Image (cartoon, rainbow, N blue to C red):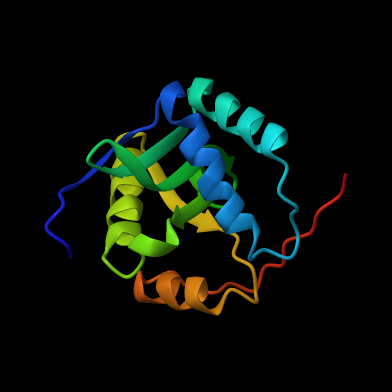
Length: 150
């Protein structure tokens, strides 16, 4: 880790430009999504105002360098709430320093405060680095398949 102090906090409206930029980096490696700044910014705005969601940022010297988000939903399998982790991304210049781990830990802490018992996420099959990262964080593959319809 560099000498800079990394701070994890809830996102604010003033962070939207930086968060949109991080999503551009993330979507550049995902095969199922195309980056659309207007659409992604709108999604971030909705998440900021949604009581069942949280959007966290990692910052250093007032500069946003990473983000993660999650949304609660009812799980009939658990008979409780689960958390869908929506986006986890760290600026490529800051990767490999534990920032993603810190973001996920903060997200899990928020979820536990909300009485959420299970965490789930979708990851692009071709994102080898991302899958390796999640594996290190003790995320397990399931037999479930994500299907999508518009």
